[in-house]
Length: 71
Image 1 (cartoon, helix red, strand yellow):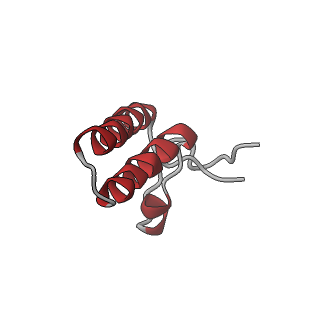
Image 2 (image 1 turned 135 degrees about the vertical axis):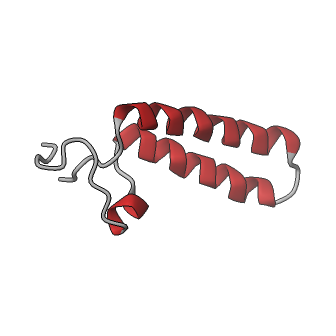
């Protein structure tokens, strides 16, 4: 299906930072911008969860498992 291009340590960091961004956006911001910032955090959490980053793929980054696909 897809090739993981984010290493495990970075996946964990993306999930933690994404959760912090989402939480901070809803606690400290009360404007509509909080939804935009929270969406950014959510995308970071998704890329950490799945181990695939479309932006890294566009830039040609090949992480762990570059030679095999997930089934």
